[in-house]
Length: 240
Image 1: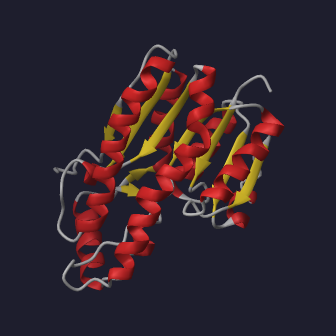
Image 2: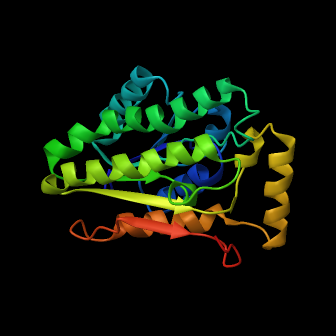
Image 3: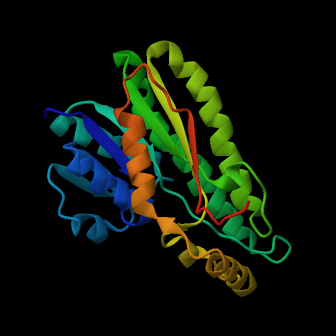
């Protein structure tokens, strides 16, 4: 392949799907990973390997990366995008939702990192883009566990950035605010969901996932000696 392999987790919808389309248009072969295989295959992207995988399954993620690298060459970019937003009143929330959020948003990030990081380090080249959120910089009502997981993403990104910098590997954090995605599909607390939707209407809606995808592609296409460490993007009318 003329351009290197890009790996995207959570690629079946939202920002993951939009980023897959952006990198495919730019000529990159892709490994797309998510739990909804049919959604990824329906994108019909060229030079694209789609695999059903849960980021909580470290072995499945590693196996898929090895399979894709055998087809397309070494992974040069990971978009560590898979995540879930179980927003709720922390005093009323089922702790099982805490477990799911923590496992996907923290352990899942580490599992995908594990699959590509050492290869990038050995080759002295690569880019890791970790999906955080503005909720990884500030706390919001009913976001308690979700904020905790996104603060985790910021912390490990800072650490891994320092670890990989001497090896010419970049670590980028993308921190969106309100985006037009399916993230609200995971919210089961009716009051929290209503408050979120009301605020979204108040500010005129979220912004398109395509804009976030364009930002990720832009950061990746910068020369390897140029690192955009973090990008924060929100609707203009989102005050905080």
